Length: 242
Image (cartoon, rainbow, N blue to C red; front, top):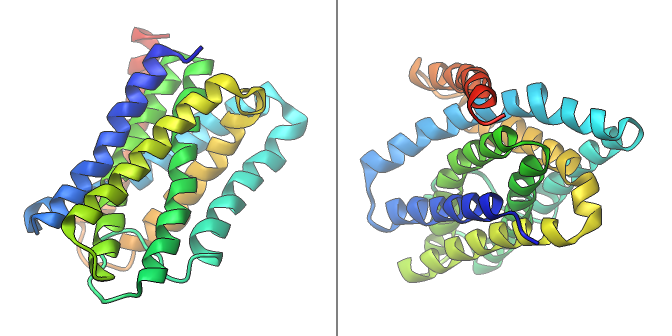
């Protein structure tokens, strides 16, 4: 059976995709600037989560298999987003693109967001605190993810409504990832290692390049604050939730 908390947090994470799409559809420039800070903050939080919690937990669970499965998770995201997909980057798309490129990016993101759900459910299988930490990390990057998919649809000639629909599909994929983990033994065994690899890729290879070349101190400060927030949150949640 599906863990109630995992499913509830999966649904909340899915809603973040729609919030990001809403910012694009309404051309909310302030909202988009805030989401840009979420990109940097989320990158720091995700990398700290992967290195400090997810990777050690996965290795402790299955020392022989975890490392190659972590690598597999990393490679799967690269395959879906930057090998099979001709045009993809996190953040708002401001140039006209083809419908084919937009559709390919959506397919790549669907695989990624499915593993978002796997990550949340796998975290809860270890402890409540790790499940909540995965939820926070995923919520943070689902905001720019919603911006990405919605703006890609609009840049390819689609309507704002179609942008919302694409963001909703990402949310559904996340919920399916939670449900699949509750029912598939292979995901219960290796889901945490896969999630660790996916989290490393999203943080280091997707999110960091989106802000590392931009001027100013705001984004770097947000990045380091994200890493620090993870350390604080982990300590707090382990005391409160166990």
